[in-house]
Image (cartoon, rainbow, N blue to C red; front, side):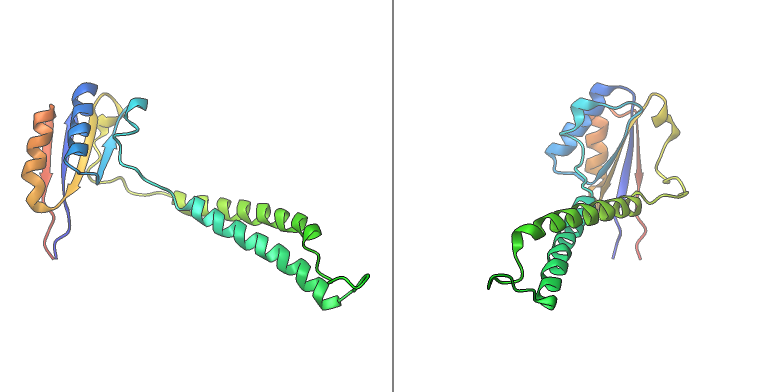
Length: 173
């Protein structure tokens, strides 16, 4: 089984960088990394979409908190069984306050822990394909693709105005 190869490109100006992103998007190549020395707000639609699992983990924590709040209140009411006026001991409306409070508490705590876990804090070695010129005045695109797509991607990036293009073939296992 072969792992994916990559094509690294360096651009000197914004128009050629944007043109390359548009052409890659049109060709359906979406597995890429983009490097820029400045934030370019107009490119949000061209950049690959990445999502964070933090929002789903927070939702799960909030649901668990709400369920726990209602379970504690209803469970204690049924356990002690204080029957007033022939009514069922567990009235839901007063327990909404506790349910809401535990929803916020558990949602907030799971969001905090999920953000810390997703941030992967700590020292990491720099990626092999990163070029320090991307911090100064150059733009870069690294496209991850199959080995047979290397030549068309190389030609696409050169046609868009890349100053340098480097192909890195993956090793076969």
